[in-house]
Every structure is written in structure tokens, then in C-alpha cells.
Amino acid sequence: MAGSSAASAEDHVPAPDNAVFFFTFLLITLASITVGGLLKRKLDFPLLTGFLITGILAGPYVLKMLSKTEVDQLDFVFDICLGFIAFAAGSELYYPEIKDSIQAIVKITTAQTITILVLGTLGVWAFSPMTSFMKDMELSQQIAVALLTAAIFIARSPSSAIAIINELGAKGPFVQTALGVTMKTIFADDEKLQGEFVTILIGEVVVSAIIGYVASALIKLVLRLEDRAVRAHVEKHHPRFFRRWWRPYLEGEVVRLRGILTLAVGFLVFYLAEFLKTEAHIHLETLLTCMVAAAIIVNSDKKRCSDGHVIHFRKRLHHALEAVSEPIYVAFFTLVGLGLNISVIPDVIDVALYFFFLRLLVLAIGSFIGSKWAGDPPLFGKISWLTYLTQAGVALALTEEIKEEFQPWGEDYATTVVSVLVIGQIVGPLTFKWAVQRAGEAHQAGAAAVSGNAANAAARLIHVWWHEEEEDGPSHATSFSRLPTADEPVGLNDDSVPATPLNESTSTLLT
Image 1 (cartoon, rainbow, N blue to C red):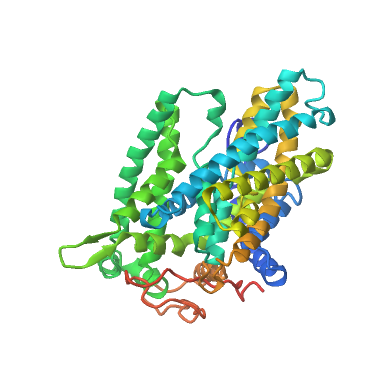
Image 2: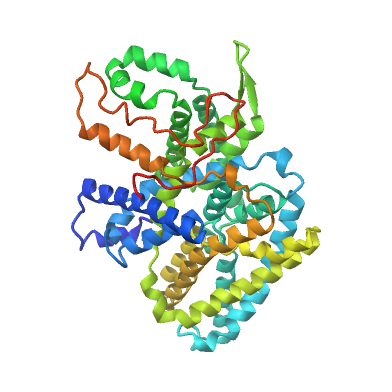
């Protein structure tokens, strides 16, 4: 998100008040919770659709509650969210569960890639006389641009897939295959356009895997935190913090502490990647690194401690990620919405719609062929393409690279492709949810959906900051703390408990 555009903008735009614009962003995310819950209840939309719509409306291109410069300065929030998404993706790579799906994933991915590159290229080239950026090009140039566009058609949005799967509590072969095919692009990046040598790519992957192993060791230390041990340490060394914050608000919250510290490890990976790129010109595949770390943890599974207690790392990682998933999904998809420029769509609506429906067609054909090849049930072949419509970071990065490298037509091209991405990002979650429900793999009762818990937590903190208390006096907020929910889990720190279910309704505080 941040980059040269942000740097150039700072020359003309006054530096924003960090406290003011960050508080504005928090208000927008709280509004996202309300809008997401409202659209889910009234229209059965995925929650993330409401978050995206809120971000689009509040962003620099509609209501302008935040400027483009301010959105760029929230890049660190974006990095934290991406770290979480990569950990969540890696935690699904539990070999005993995915080994039966690997062959199907490879076959569907291969069929989709070949079909999209061939038919997508032909479809874009056939429409070239109708586009402002291709109509005056020579034949070879038109084919090259069409091939680039087909390559962008291949890109997916793993973040959207993971969010909807968690919201629906989805589980089954259809979901496993859809997520596997989607995640194949999670560590693709814009530099592949520059034709990096295979040896360099292999070197980057090896370095990323090594750092991922180190990150997994750090996260295992975090996951070994026990509630009683943390409580005793805080009470002994930080008595004031213990009385004022821990006892009324954080008691028994060690799982969320594990989640927060896991996010911190993910952010360190992104920080290290930026440092290596700047100081040593070494490119680290950050998403791959975080995925490797999570995959190592879930496949390590468990460890027996000296006292005989068994730590199930896989369960603990899932619990930790679910404990912090609510604010992460709200913040991430609100940020994505803030960065989407819908004002460009009316200018290129005809070409954008053609590209959008062309991508739908080639995805449907490729998915059908791949499902037949993999021997999937007939229903899967008919509806699986509906899970691949969303596009986000990878496609935007490729588009930005083309825009910068190829002028003067790159500007018009980028405007068109971004419009296609915006349409797909809005429509895709709806089709993904419908397809999972149609396949019979949605289990709403156990869904990990964003709820009013995030709003309740924010309200509790605001309440404490507003009502200052005496150091040794009773808490003014005890009646407001630990607000119960209908499905609040018991024994969250027990390694044997199921994953934390999260309420799907929005907070009564905001409705």
C-alpha cells in the first residue's frame, strides 16, 4: 500500500495528525462491524462484503473520511493482517488432512492455468479494437498485453477465501480443494514480471523457509504460555497493572495473549523482510515465510513437558488465531475497501464488464475440466469456479507493475483492470458463500464469524479510559467487564477444547 506514490503525495499534502486519523480508522472499523452484521442479517451477505462496502464509502474516493496519504500510513496494520492470513493459511496445511486433496489441487490448478492463459489471451485480444489502450498497437503488442491480462486473471485472493470459510465454519473436500487451488498464488508477487532467474527464486524460497522455521520456533514458545504462570508473573512484577487491568479484564485471556504475540511474530517477519530488502537487497517471501512457520507448527502437533503435561501445538495455534481473528478481519477488509477506487469504474465500465465476464467464463471452463480430470463429483465441477472470483493484492501488484513499466498506455490499462478487480472483490464473496452452501459444507453453528465481541472489547477499553479509578480502589468497570455471550466457551486454555466459536451477531452496543 505504501510506496513511491505515498512519498510523492507527502510533498503536496500536509502530514496528518496520527492520533486523529488512527482514531478515525477505528471508528470506520466499528462502523464496518455494524454494516457487516446488518447486511448479513437482512440479505445473508458475507460479513466481509459489509466491511469492504464500509471501507469504500469512507475512503478517499467517496466520503473522504481518510485521505490516500493517511490510508498509506496504515501500512503497518496491513502487514499485521497479512501475517495473520498467512498463518491461518499455513495452519490448514495439516498433511494427514490434505494428502488426499493434493492430486486434485494440482490437476485443477494445471487445467485452470492452461485454460485461462489460452482462452483468456484469445478473448482479450479479440476485444482489443474496442479498448483505448490496445486498438492502435501492433499485433505482437496486442498479444503481449492480452497474455499479461490473462496472467492477472489467474491471481486469487486467499484472504477472502479464508475469511468466508471461517465465517461459515466450512469443512470438507470441496472447501479443501478450493482453498488449496486459491493458496497457490499467495506468495506470488509483482517481481516475477521482471523475469527473475530460477536460481534466484530457489534461493529466495530457501531463505524464506529457513526464516519460517525460526519463526515457528518463536511461535512455539508463545504457545507454551500457561495462564497460571503468566498471572503469577504479572501479579509479582507488575502489581498495579495486575490490579487495574489484569484482574478485571484480562483474567483467563492467555489464549488471546498467545494470539497477539503470534501476530507480533508475523509483523517482525514483515519488518525483517523490509530491512533485508533495503540493507542487503535480499527479497524475502514474507507470506511464504509465515505459511511455512504455521505449517511446521501444525505438523509438529504436540510436545510432552517435563511435568507430564502434553501441549497440542496445532490446537493451540488454531485457538490463538481464532481469538484475534475478529478485529483482524474487520481491519483488513476495511483497509482493502479504503484502497479501492470505484470512481474509475464509470469511465471504463464496458471494457471492465467484458473482462470480468470473460474471466468468469474461462474460470468456469478450466475448473470444469480440472474437476473432471481429478474425478471430483459432478456438482463440484459445476460450481467450483464460483470460489475463485475474488482478487486482491497479487493482481493489484501485477497491475501496478504494468502501469509503471509501460507508458503511455499503462495508465488506461491499470484503470480498466482495477475496475475488474473491484467488481470481483464485491461479487466474489457472495458467489463463494453460495457455492460452499450449495456443496453442503457450511456449518454455521460453529462459524468463526466477526461479531460484536470486537465492539464490546473496544467499549470496555473506552469505559476504563473514561472512568479513571483510584489505584487501590474498586474497579468502576467490573459490572461492564467480561460481557457474556450466548456461546462463550468454557475452559479456553484446555488443549482438548474445540476451537472457539464466535457469535455471528453484531454488538447490541452498536445496534
